[in-house]
Image (cartoon, rainbow, N blue to C red):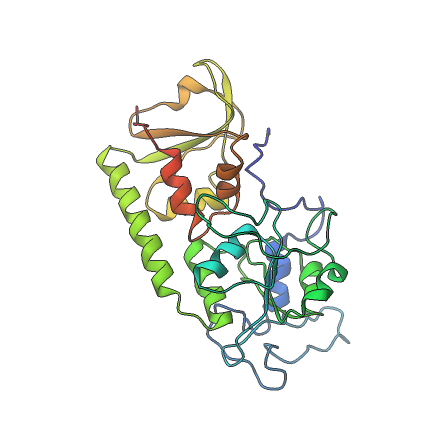
Length: 300
């Protein structure tokens, strides 16, 4: 099916083999002592969640990913996605360096100059060599969609902050990083929840029950348009607010999207700020993006 530039925010996967979620669950299935889960480490290295599993059995699961534990908060963090950077800044912490596919500079929701960046111009996440100069002890990459092989590489340098269930929602993400760096997530969470609640109430007052997110530069009534996958991170966040997300596997005429109780909004691929926020919803970018999408719009 045609894909919008927003429907697959993560890197492409091989056609065969287990998916990323399966790999992550296998990697942490022994202990699940990841950041954001309250289980403490099991002794020894304070940033290792449990002892290494013997590899003599070819069917044995790999050892847990090396992650921070509550008794050893991370001090020097490198963020490897836009949402991870947003979360760390919302917690009042500065990264020692940052990298993101969508950039790490100022955004309408992020009034902060770009932090130092690794010397990396290749595809995908930065190489270990490019990260060596920063003296890091923790990588925040919960929204970077890393593969297990990439996680195993990063843990050679420092602990990693990921969720075993895949990319977390904004609140889970905030709690996960807050636990790792020893910060209180409540002030940032309360501000975001207040903004999201106000946005949801406003849509309900208009009779909105569902959103259709059109991806395109504009359309006539009979023009077929692509819609954002409701299973995307942004779609899941909207559903978490109690509204449905209507999406179609193939382009549909624009006029067919407008129905009673359905709010049709549009992401223009040329709007780099909105594209970045929809690809990487976070504690700060999500409220901004939702407000931007419905400005001056009413449901059919």
